[in-house]
Length: 65
Image (tube, rainbow, N blue to C red; front, top):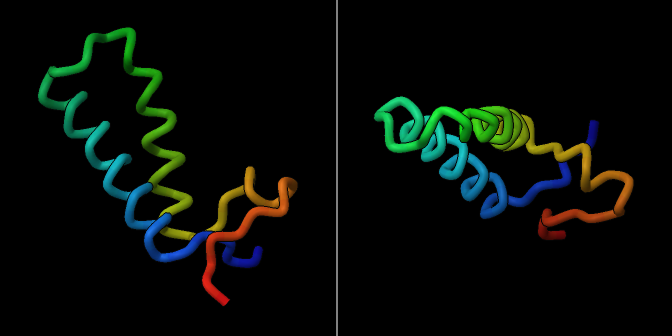
């Protein structure tokens, strides 16, 4: 796995993931929005690893060269 996410991309994903989880835990999101927790987990994992599986087949990389 080669890193294909830049620093800003990773920071934005981490913030979104944490924000979604915080909103859910504080009860600010209705129950049916719990599907967003799947996305928040994905955002956090890609932020930690620096690899987005969707970027790979599309040939996208936000890493500065």
